[in-house]
Image (cartoon, rainbow, N blue to C red; front, side, top):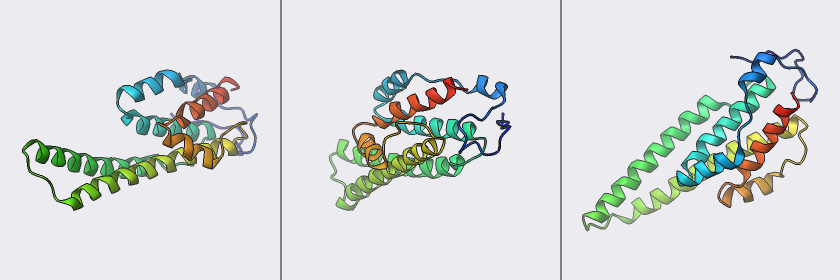
Length: 168
């Protein structure tokens, strides 16, 4: 359900009134629970969580500032290629055949590209929250650093989104 914004300048005015039906749909998420789920899934849930926060930010602003569908399609394509290469390399090891070195480099490169892609989405979420005048959003450098330390940036950003929802 699209958000009905009564004031079109939501990004600049924190006190903008949003349709109550929308606020009821957008619920606060427990950052600790989501972080535990991320740990259980060996970090894979972090990508989903980042997209969920991007969706929440878009809905809070009443417009699509972060292109979720396009980013999700690119992510699924990159992750699928990474997964295929990962499975192939591991099957080769199980059979005792050492795979060619370029495949190792390819897997590593895909992993780095996925991490960069993830950090790009996290930085966009942080940037949009700053535009909404939310306080204490970590700087770009800190978000990158916290993302590299096992996605610590995610619970921080989620708590900021929850704070905005609390004030609505």
